[in-house]
Image 1 (cartoon, each protein chain N blue to C red):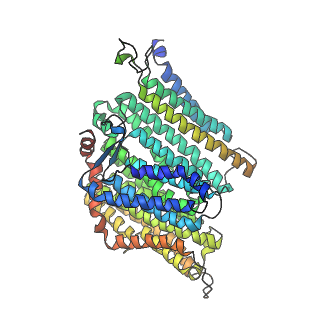
Image 2 (cartoon, rainbow over the protein chains, first blue to last red):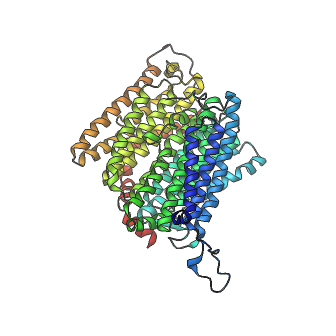
Image 3 (spheres, rainbow over the protein chains, first blue to last red):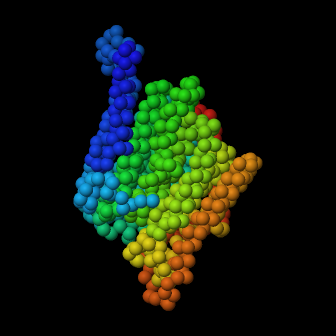
Length: 119
Length: 489
């Protein structure tokens, strides 16, 4: 039980990552695949945040006397997540706009029907 | 001294300034990439002698490494940035006459961003920064593949996007795992501390990072997106994707294996993966009827060859691999550019429709032939010099296994020769052989192709021209201690 409470963020993050990968690999609807990409992204962002997180930690600013560096949350992963969220938004936006164009061409979003290009 | 950071800043700034320039005049937009890459080429050429003398470390914001982000401008970085600027310049001159339809403004913005990403990947010394530049490269290439907006383009773009973004997620996961253990993102600092953690905890992030980068580099089991994307993109973009984007991916894989993880025990695996990639690529190319798909599969084969050479882990092997990258960029660039106008004039991508076009478009066909001969590896073209160097490197290891693998590689080259000669035969010796009125590609598109061809012949006749920079680039990969020392002091 202690293992669970100590590692709850990591378990959640990898849970999201596996759910995302599962959706991408198994689903045939393009919109669902794009949702899978979003969940995968979220899982990785949660994982990055969890790396630097300390329970009951403070922001890394010496705003009050008596604050110690050991008790501060690592700010670097948060900066990484900010960048990674922006990249994720760009990818989702591009994917959705391509999905609209794909629907105009094929009249369907079923990836099983869209296979003109093949080996 | 010129600051190497201009190589990244100038294209990035102009990419965002383009819409404003477009407000003033729509006509000058297409000349801006030409100017930007001319500038980059001049800066890179000016920096080469200095970098060969001593590696330049640019500390962004003045933070001392390992804090902050630093650029590592070593021989490898400057070699690649020169190559990117050269290909970028020639292809943007070609695009002046080739890109006539579609949203041209967006094409030029994305083109600048794509090459900014590529330059950033090869120059950066920070692994998260590498990820960010990689994403710039990938996202702009997803959009450019779909540039024509036709059925094939959209479909291959969405395939490329899904596979590529799973790859970059894996890359980010690997970087996160590495950061969690070492608490640093600086590549030299990671390389310095990598031996302080146990090998299973290195192995997991390494596999994530290599798989993520391997998707972009099109290493064998991860290359399903490449033939679709390269064949549906506009030909000028295919030349960049094939000549620059996958090689930048491969650069990142090599950097991660050699410098960061020092994983020389895994190189045997990459030798076999390289040979497998080569064979799969060449055999699939042989059975293609669509010319651009054939060239795309041929790129996969070349990537396998480069991987094999680099994984030999000797000075000669790594420099042969880098040499093969240069000759592949020049050769495949020339092939895609000339094929662009062959397709434009015949209106079809089928090889059978090129019958007798050698009479109609003599210059373009001649340039296609030079590119094909160089990729196959006939003397006196650049491909011969680089393939010869790879075989010399493999034989000089003196192991029986590598001698056998050289035989397999030569078999791959024979297959390569077979399908390229098939195309050349149908261009020159089939179909209507009467003299018909010539219908040549425009001069402005022929000039960059001629420059590519001249460079191929020049390097093929005089390969020692590149010997010095290739040698110092190879020792940058092999001597990782020097890399760490020059950053951390």
